[in-house]
Length: 128
Image (cartoon, rainbow, N blue to C red; front, side):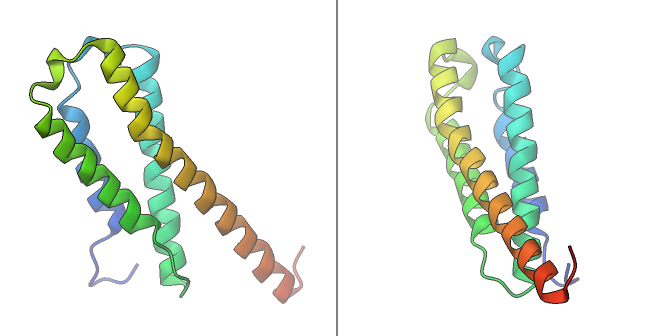
């Protein structure tokens, strides 16, 4: 990464930590849903890293910007709803699904683009 830039992954992770520390004590996040949330956050950070690397290689990539903005929207929404611990579990599950689904889609699209460009460059260099 270029030294004078703030790594977008750091911004994304800081926003994710801020967002989900508001919901950490909610009983609806115990068990499988909590594992799903943290796994999806990892995939989101992975897609931001890949998008940043694509930008550094000279390709246009909106992934870092989109993911950071989406997380910021989630954080602002968490403050607008009031006390997140007072939410019913069903509402929390629905909100979590609405929030995490675009992250999974962006991760998948970024991974597909990354692999396509990798194959393209390997073919140009004559590598298998």
